[in-house]
Length: 87
Image (cartoon, rainbow, N blue to C red):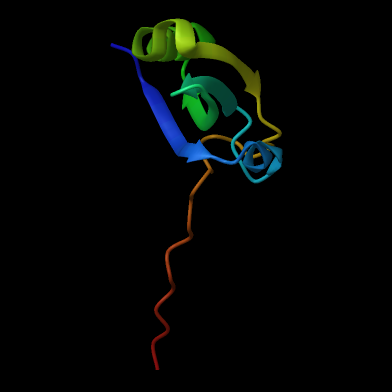
């Protein structure tokens, strides 16, 4: 089973320059009604990412490029639990 995680759907291309993204993130380019559209997605393997988008958009799929993310994927979106102080 393909495991593709879409972080940002139909976003601006500039969002891929964010270094706060996981280093496994890719900027995916495809056409919707003749307009270039962008997603930022992750997958376990790049072939899974390709298969998912090609199956979904067929000939309207253009390409995917690695985003500028620098964060470990395990830590992406992690928020430390709030500490409860005892009085």
